[in-house]
Amino acid sequence: MKKTTTKIKAAKFKKDAKIYESAFLNLQRYGVRFFAALLLTAIVSLFGFACESPSLKKVNSSTNSTQTNAPESTAAKSSLEDDLQTMRNANFDFIYVFRRRDGGALDGEDKRYLKAYAPAATNRFVLTDENKAVIAGSSYRFEQENLDNLQKRFIIEN
Image (cartoon, rainbow, N blue to C red):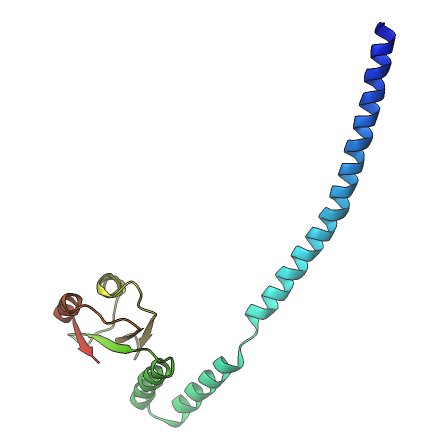
C-alpha cells in the first residue's frame, strides 16, 4: 500500500512539475513580449515629450523676435500682452491680472495666498511680466468676499 501511494505521489509531483514548468515557460514568453511592449512605449513617450510642439515653436519664435527687435521694457510688456491674448483665445469667461501692491516680484507666499482665495475651478494661472504679475483665467466668477481678501494684498485688473 505504501508503494502505491509513493508512486502516486511521485507521479503527481512529476505532473505538477510539468504544469509549473509549462506555466513558467508561458510566463517567460509573455513576459518578454510584455517587457518589449513596455520598453517600446517608454521610448515612444520619451521622444514624444522631448519633441517641441509646433504651437510652442510659434510662441518661442515670436518671443525671441520680440526680444531681439525691441528694448527690454517693451519685451516684458509684449510678453504680458501675449499672455493676456492667449487667455482671451482660450475663451475664459473671467480673466484677472494680479500684481503686488509694492510692484515687486511675486514670491511663493503670494502664490499660495492667491491660490487659497481663488475658486477651486480656476482653470489656469500664468506667471508673467518678469514674475511681477499673475494672470488667472477661469470659467467661474471669483466670489466678492475672496476678491476683497485678494485686494488687500494685490492690485487686481479685470
